[in-house]
Length: 202
Image (cartoon, rainbow, N blue to C red):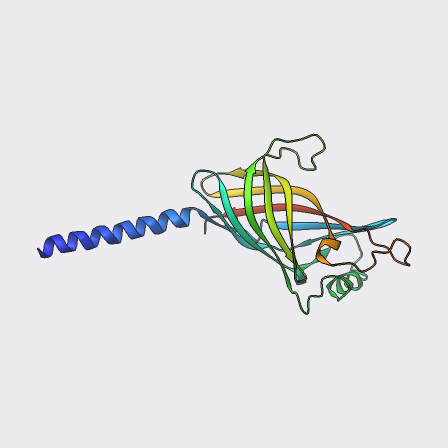
């Protein structure tokens, strides 16, 4: 009887371990050293570009399909690519202020994947080779709006890469400073976003 009991316990332990392993195989973590969110904001006569860091996780069904994902974008990681070092702080501090991201109250933005479906590349798509349409909730400065964008996603057993180029309207999140075309400083509402995300098993 004891032998049978030990066999049952061992079998249950093995089943639990296998279940955990299967679950872990379907969970990917952002490689923060290989991932970046790029931004481009513009006025009528000039523009600025830069990047954000990104972290998070992606879930799959184990059959090559993404079923969900959660990402954090720390706003304090914002950089600028086009200004000299002497003037970058002025722009970055302004972007972190209450006029824009208000990092004192909202240090992070976030994105939650709700759905990823097959997509056929269309003429005029900003990303070449787009094969998926991603739908998710993007939260920034305390406001959440749903966005959709095509992406090129490549999935293998140990890594998923996602590349996308799309535009968001900052007014959808209440970021309405300098939005008057007749004002002394007018900043266009559209912001270009480029995603280059790699997630792997850890």
